[in-house]
Image (cartoon, rainbow, N blue to C red):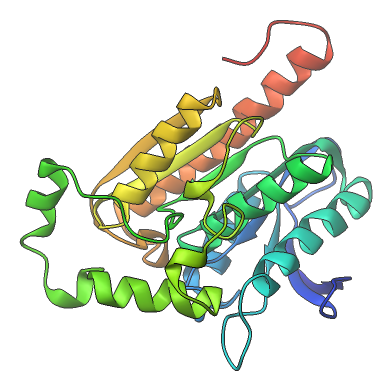
Length: 280
C-alpha cells in the first residue's frame, strides 16, 4: 500500500494504491471512489480501505481516490474533476503497476458511484479511453429520488429515521454538492439525467432497505434502455452503505461478487482481443 499524488486541475489528487502480493502482470485494476454524501468520508473509511484490501487480496490492484469533498466552498465539478484526473493519471501509470490499460475498471459507492458514472460520461463525451466496466454500489445518481416501488416503500416503512433519506435531507446533500438547486443539475453531475449510450458494461449493487435503491434501480433501467449491458443485484437484509460494515455477511458476499465480476471481465476481454464473441 502506497500513498501517491496524481496531477489534477485543482492541484494534486491524493490516491492510495493497493497492490496484490507477489509479482505479476496483466492484473486488473479498479479506480475506486468512496461515498459520504459528497461532503464526508475519506480513504481510511471501511468502504474505501477495507474494500480495497479485500479486492487486492483477491488479485486486483486498487487505486483509491481521495477526491476533494464538497466543503468550505467546494462544489461540482471539483470532486468530479479529481476523479477524472485520477482515472486518467492511473491509465498513464497502469503498465508500471503491471496492468493492461484495457483491464482498468472504475467504480464507487453512493456519492462515489455518482462520481464514477459522471467521470465515465465525461470520458465518453471527450473521446477518451473508457474503463473496462463501471462498478456502482448503492448509487446516488438522481437530483430527486425516483418514487419507491410499493415493495421498497414497505421495506422502508419500518426503518428508524436515522436510516432514512427523507426528501429534505436528500435535497440538502444534492444542493450542497451542486452549489445550486437540484433543478440546475446536468447529466454529468447527476448521471440519472444523462444520455447513457456508449457506456461500458455496468454492475450495480443496491441495498434492500435503502431509499437510494430507487435511484439504482431506475439507473439500471435507463442503462438497459440505452443498450448498455447491466448486471443489477441486490444485497438482501442490509441498509445503505453496507460496505462500511465489512464484517457483515452481505458485505463479504458483495466484495466477493465484485472480485468475480472483475475477474470475469478480464477473461472476456481476452476473448474479445482474440476476435472471439462479444461480451454478453
